[in-house]
Length: 80
Image (cartoon, rainbow, N blue to C red; front, top):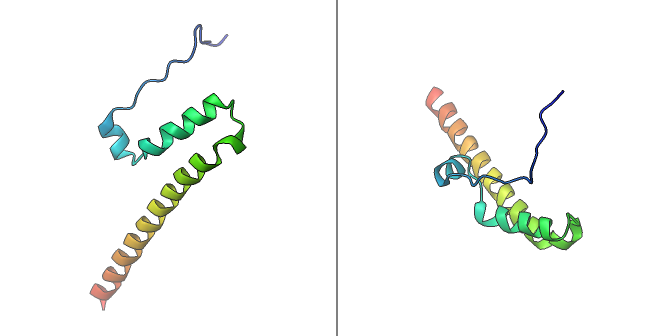
């Protein structure tokens, strides 16, 4: 029917240039995933790591929105 894995999952490390292009905060994501794995995904045990990771994601999002707003404002000023 379908293909099934025959052995344990072996994650492949991401190439640094691929991680940079995808803007992955590897230094925060790896400790979060290690904590999750070690604690069997008991979410309350990794609150600090999750908070740090999500704060980084939020800050990145806010920076991108500010850049977008600045570019939009600049475009509107150029049209006037």
